[in-house]
Length: 83
Image 1: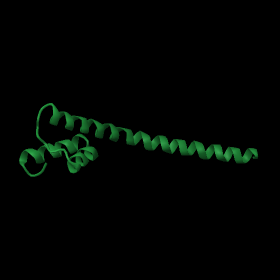
Image 2: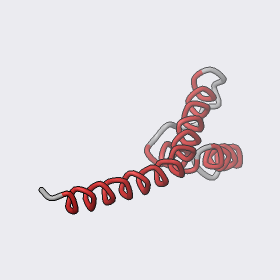
Image 3: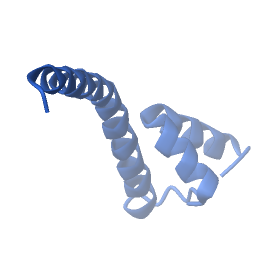
Image 4: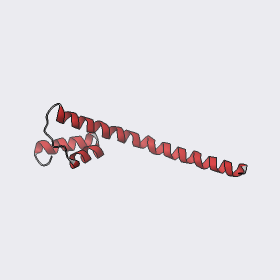
């Protein structure tokens, strides 16, 4: 392989690593928020007995929304609309 091709490959790899880093930097806080929301949701049900049904839709809402999704599930549960 010539030196020119190796430099091109190195530049392409560095650009790919940079873009991967930027994507991961923006996704990690969302993942942490979702995991924390799910843990609080499960803790509220198991330790404090809120009685919110753990099903696909409640887990999906909390998983995608994090703490905001948890607040939606709690409000809908206490109003009596869902969950």
